[in-house]
Amino acid sequence: MSRRPPARGAAPRQPGVVRIIGGRWRGTRLPVADAPGLRPTSDRVRETLFNWLMPALPGARVLDLFAGTGALGLEAVSRGAAHATLVERDPALAAALAGHVERLRAHDRVRVVREDALRWLAAATPEPFDIVFLDPPFAAALWEPALRALAPWLAPGGWLYVESPPGAAPAPPPGWLPHRELRTAQARAALYRGPGNTRADTLAGAHPAP
Image 1 (cartoon, rainbow, N blue to C red):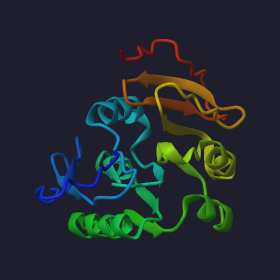
Image 2: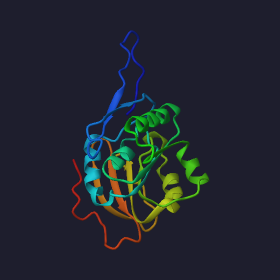
Image 3: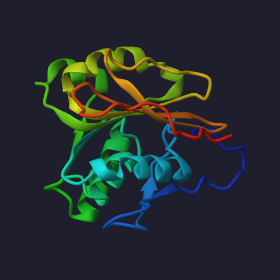
Image 4: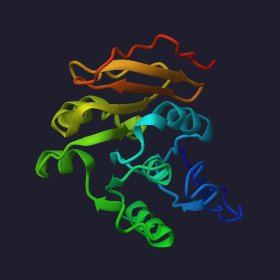
């Protein structure tokens, strides 16, 4: 969600909001800090994504890199994930995420890490996550280094969501297979299944949006 400075004399910009779509916190509206390059995943894409993930969510451990508004990680916990780690380097956004956790009383289920995502992946001890959301700022083009660094953090048979510009298709780690894909005018949303799953997962049956 790109920002432009307000015109001289214009009224102050009103803060945005994101809405949790389903689960225990359904309908909760969370304020969004105004930060350069912030582009929350749309309601339409989130609804589709979590329909795809529904069977995998109960009890899952989730990693939301470049968390931004936290909409993906918080939506996952709302819908049954056991725990989410939200990694965000921007101080204002990380503070807003901590405020969301406080408001939702989710300290036992959501951890906010204020750190650069690539630096955190390189320095922290890897732990297996069942679902990973990768939606970096589009202008930064961080998909390739993030996907390389993610490999040891992905649980066998887990799920990897990658959001990118509509004309881009970042390659997943070796052995990860495309499961579902959605394209809108603003983004490409792709879900991959990791090695170790018990059945083949391909794009068969997926219907990309116009």
